[in-house]
Amino acid sequence: MASVSFEHVKKIYDNKVEVVHDFNLEIADKEFIVFVGPSGCGKSTTMRMLAGLEDISAGTIKINDRVVNDVEPKDRDIAMVFQNYALYPHISVYENLAFSLRLRKMNNEEIHKRVCEAAEILGITEYLGRKPKALSGGQRQRVAIGRAIVRDPAVFLMDEPLSNLDAKLRNQMRSEIILLRKRVDTTFIYVTHDQTEAMTLGDRIVVLKDGWIMQVGTPQEVFDTPHNLFVAGFIGSPQMNFLKANLVEENGKYSVSVLGVKIPLNEDQNAALKKNGKTSQEITLGVRPEHTTALFNSQEDSVECTIQVNEMMGSELHLHLVTKNDDKIILRLPTIDLTNEQRSQLTYGNKMYITFKAKVMHLFDPQTEKNLIYG
Ligand SMILES: Nc1ncnc2c1ncn2[C@@H]1O[C@H](COP(=O)(O)OP(=O)(O)OP(=O)(O)O)[C@@H](O)[C@H]1O
Ligand SMILES: [Mg+2]
Image (cartoon, rainbow, N blue to C red; front, side):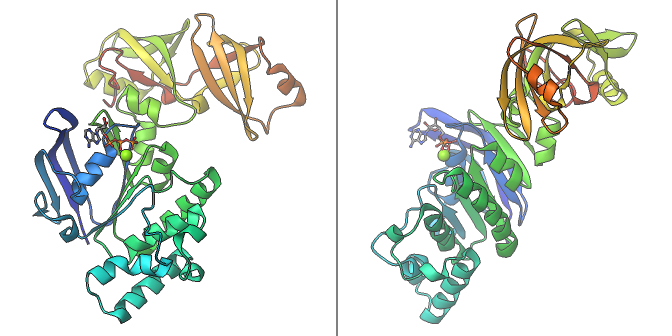
């Protein structure tokens, strides 16, 4: 059982460089939280401060309302799994799992019980007698996770535990972590730079950039209502398209003017913009590739584009288009409904027409980069 709270936490390395700034976050007991962001944004540093492996330069970290700033790592009831496994090479898998328990002078019977239970959960019982070097990468990663499980920690920290594995094994381990979470049923904090991992694992995601929290929310929230350009671009694949556009306010009604077409906004968007006191202004319009409609023929309010690249992904195509103004737009087109004739048209230099739906448009201020509706 453990809740975790970060209050105004900062990290300054070598008394000069501040790499985590005013970090505030409440994590509930048994919540699965994912820190996600590009390399160097401070994910590991934040995690290591919680584990007690780095000093906290300012602020307070609490575990279950107990301030742990000056508590030794071993007394924080936390277990951490690292990217590089860090197994002891000269002892068996069994002894690797038992190691921390022996240090704690636990009796042999209890150690045996915990090691066997963890091995069972992770499906590594048959490898208990082997040395780590006789295991595959995925099996070693399971042992590394097992070493954390046997300790029965209040908080489970995982720092990019899957990044050394190949794509297929990573997908498999990802679903195993979801199952593990149900069995272990404790608080998890998981670090990754992979947005798919973040989306599939997290109850809530914390998106970080340059040591700042950009947004905290459920996977659906950060996908549907990104608070700023960074989150909009970081979450989702292929990346959201961004276009220069104008927000137009006329008699209290809002519309977006983009590439020569004007799209009236819906009631909710109108109400929010009015509430936020917005008037006509330049904007950066964001539209996801899966939310852009492609047409083979022009219609009212469609924008003409030229096909540059057609990437065949199997169940869908990723079409890279360019507008007359040289704006680049990617869209996703399911292949199942396309006729052979249509497929043959989807080649370099041919025309396509796109339309925009108000409901799936994201409006950002080009200067502040904030979402005009939710930011
Ligand atoms: N011991 C250190 N001394 C000085 N600067 C450090 C130290 N450790 C990390 N940094 C810097 O702090 C910043 C955050 O690093 P951190 O390791 O937390 O990033 P990260 O988000 O985990 O990145 P990655 O995805 O590459 O693991 C980086 O700019 C890094 O160079
Ligand atoms: Mg890191």
